[in-house]
Image 1 (cartoon, helix red, strand yellow):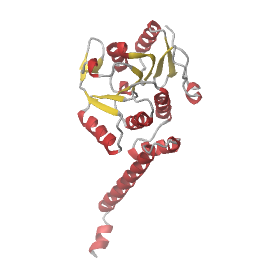
Image 2 (cartoon, rainbow, N blue to C red; image 1 turned 90 degrees about the vertical axis):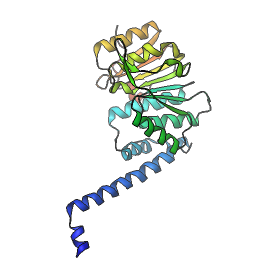
Image 3 (cartoon, rainbow, N blue to C red; image 1 turned 180 degrees about the vertical axis):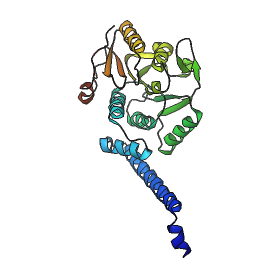
Image 4 (cartoon, helix red, strand yellow; image 1 turned 180 degrees about the horizontal axis):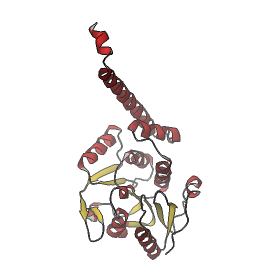
Length: 252
């Protein structure tokens, strides 16, 4: 009778279902992550990546997938260190790419302003034995006309081949801060992928700066505010599936 009464308790059943769902997602995430970290590039299928994000509790939307594809594609061909401003599940994938690369200098440097999130990402990287990724916690700081991380650039690598500014979603003008603080640390062949740039003044600033660097500045997705800046010597284009959604080069 007691068991029947317990099972008949709606709140108790909801709790059981929630726990079962949580452990199912946890096992699914672990299985997908292990497959992606295995070193077998063939395992990194679109479906596997999508499953990883779904089990994480953040299913990929079309715009998310477009930016993610670009990040992973550019990371594959990057010839040197990669900088990621703002950490997320993509950090795990980028770190795996660096681990599997024959280029020893290809290391992932991650900046994160949230201390709790920094520790969480470090735990994930440790659990899945990703050795080529480094998470640096640095508080946000207000500069003259932008918000960026408070750390001194000397703590970072001397040259970056790829810079990913996904953190601009949370930090206004974060991409401008990245360029202002780190422009002397961009490699001769560099690519910058920026997300959530929707302010016209910011877009014009990025286009103007790219021009001074003899680099191309392309608005890949206007709705998402996805901008790509690449040095003219960079010969690796975005995948066709992404370029179809683009809006062309930015005008000055």
